[in-house]
Length: 490
Image 1 (cartoon, helix red, strand yellow):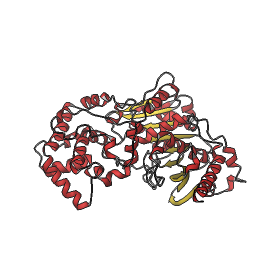
Image 2 (cartoon, rainbow, N blue to C red):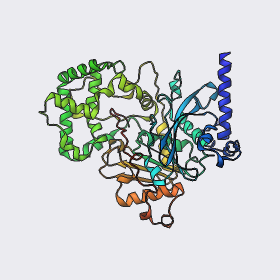
Image 3 (tube, rainbow, N blue to C red):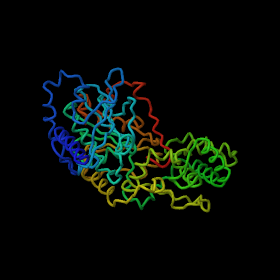
Image 4 (cartoon, rainbow, N blue to C red):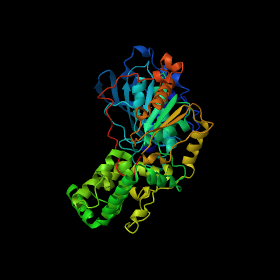
C-alpha cells in the first residue's frame, strides 16, 4: 500500500510538471518548455495576480519564506523534483530555489554556485548588468536538497541539468523575457553543462572561472601553471614554507590534535589526523593562488618563523577544519562528482620529495565516506568539451590570470558561434567581467546586454564602449560573496 501511495504521489508530481514542461526532459534538450502555454492558461488573468501567487500556482512549488528587499520581492522556495528524471515514478525530493523578483518585463538570470544556495538575497554580476530578475538553485544532493535515502548513482551532471531545465520550464511562463545562465567555479561548470544538455533553454551563458578537466589522467597544465605564475621569488617562498610545514609535522600535528580535541573534530573519512594534516599542507600553494594575489607574496612567512606562526599561516590559507569529518561532510556531493565525472587536478611536488607519507592519497575518493560507492564514468567531460568547442552558441567564459583552476579552461573552436573567452589580468578565482581589461570588459558587457535583449541602441549599432551596467551598485545586494572554499575545491 505504501509503495502504491508513493508511486501515486510521484505520478501526480510528474503530471503537474508536464503541464509546465510540455513533456519528459530529453538529454538532447528537445524537451524545452513546449508546454509553456499550458501552464500559463491555468491562470485566468496572470497580469492581475500577485507574483507570489503566480509562483505558488506552479505544481510542486512551495514557499519557505519571503524576505523584504528594497526594490525587489525575494522568495525562498522549494520545488519538487524527481530523484531520477529517467524514472520519475521512483520518488521525489524538494530542491531549494530562490527568486529575486524585479519584474516580469525584465530578463531573468539563472544562477547556481554548483553547491548550496544562499537564502539571503544577493545579485550575480549578470543580474546587475541587465537589471533583471534572478533565480538561484541549489545543486542536488547538497543539503537540504538531498533525497532521503540518497541514491548517489543519481548524482550526475545530466540529472542536475535536468533539475535546472524543469525549474526554467516552470518559471518561463511567468518570466517570458530573455534568460541567461551564470555561475562561478563549479557554478560556471554547472551553467555550461546545463547548456550542453538543454542548449535552447537559455539565450546566453556567462561562466566564471570554470575548470575543464577533459582528460583526468593528463594534468601537466597545472604543473606548467605553478612553474610560471607570478615571480620566481614568490614561488620559491611558497614552496619553502610548504616544505617547512611538513618538516615540522610533529609539532604542527600536536597543535592540530589539541585544536581537534577542543572542538570535537574527527577524522573518520580521511582515516587519520595525520592524513588530514598532509592534505592541508599539500593544499597550501594551490589555495594561496586560488584566493590570494601577488601583493600577498610579501606576507608569506620566512622559513625561520615560529611554529605557532607557521601553524596560523597554514590554517589561514588551507584551513585545517576543512579536512575534518565535519568540514568535509557538506561537500561530499562535490567530491563524489569529482571522482566520478568532473575529474580533479593532480600536481607534482618535487620540492616535497621524501616528506610525503601518503603519496597518491590526495584524490576525491579519500574525502568521500567509504560506504558511498564511486565509479568513474569515462568520456563525460570530453563530450562537454567537444560540444562547447564545436556546437555552443552565445557563451562567455571569464578566467583569472593567476587562478590555478584556469590552467585547463574551456576553449572555443570554429563551430562555436558568438562566443568569448576572456582572462582578467592578475586576477584569482574571483575573476569577473568588472576585472577585465577595459576593452574586454566593454565587449563582454555588450554581449551580455545583447543576449538579454536589453542592449541600448548604441550597443546594438556596434559601440561596445556604450555598454554599462543597467542597475546601479547596491551595497546590500552586490557585496562580494564569501565563497572561499578551502581544500581543493573549485
